[in-house]
Image (cartoon, rainbow, N blue to C red; front, side, top):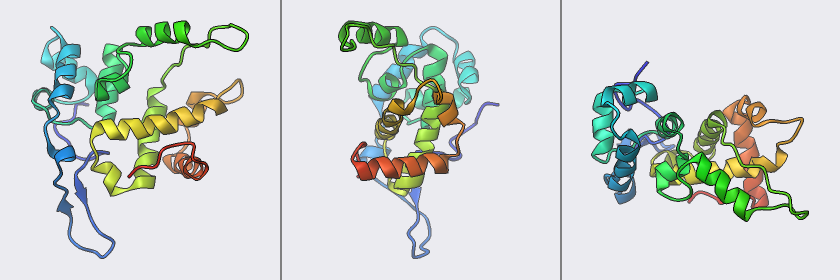
Amino acid sequence: MAESGEKSGFSANVTTSHSGESARHIRSRESDAPDLELAARIKEIVGDEAGTSFSDHCGFSEGMLRKYLKGAKPKPRLLANMANYKGVMIEWLATGQGPKTRAELRAAQSQSQVHAGGEPVPAARIDPALLRQCLAACTMVYGAPFAAAAVARQVEHAADLYNAMLPNVGPRLTLQDIASREPAGLAEMLRGFLALGAVRPFS
């Protein structure tokens, strides 16, 4: 069911203090400024498709799509929906960095990464459910400042956690297994990685 607006999520720009003060809107250049580069990338992947069709497939209204095309920032999970629907990398869509498509990522990995014995490293496959869980875990650990940060920063830190988990993936543990865990469990993993210096702290 399509969403008619931004009701809640990782990018809400409201915070409260522990002293019980009323909620206040965080005004900052980073969180409030329209992201026209992101809007341009969204326009690029929409292409010639009708706005109603694109927005229906991605889980929000055509009115929200118009706002995104003017520079409003989608919630990370909606960015993930757009990326999955159009077959592009969420990192590229959110930040403009890295390969645009999974095919480009596989090609880059096959050319630049090899095992010690000369065997190509298997291409990475992003699990959307796990990425969403990583975003939820980051929100639990980092709190309101993370929730108010730009989508690009949220994705970068969620990707750090995602990548830190990859060495644990093998025949007995899949990405889907990790994604099925509660966000609180992944939050504990994030705290452990932070203590080990395996991920960058959010600041």
